[in-house]
Image (cartoon, rainbow, N blue to C red):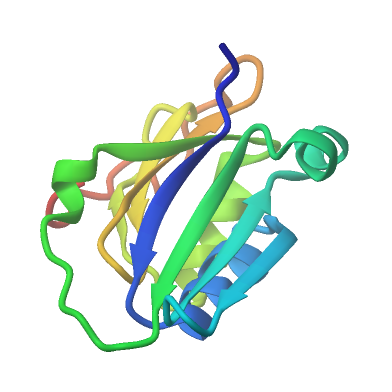
Length: 146
């Protein structure tokens, strides 16, 4: 058995690609448009997994965009996607500067949660040892749910 991908339905493909590619720095490795099925599939991989993702699509995130408008709710029911990051403080600042709410700030220097434009919880984990706790994260409260 081989883990292939996690599928997330998105309402606005361009907004989701901006979040996942521009802000989280994932890379598009494949795209499939189905005129008959009226949907687009976009497969994304993290930098450290690009080679394997291009060959076997493992592991990737599959963004599914249905061309006919639908309302998706219950993003919290999905659970979350998790990414190991080089510097959790730098990434959280980048996300916050771009208007993304840091739902669970990285107070411990190890873990944070944000949400995608479609309400999917994203867990960010510091690679290696936790960074030393620092401001403004240390005193920042949780916001909303994750």
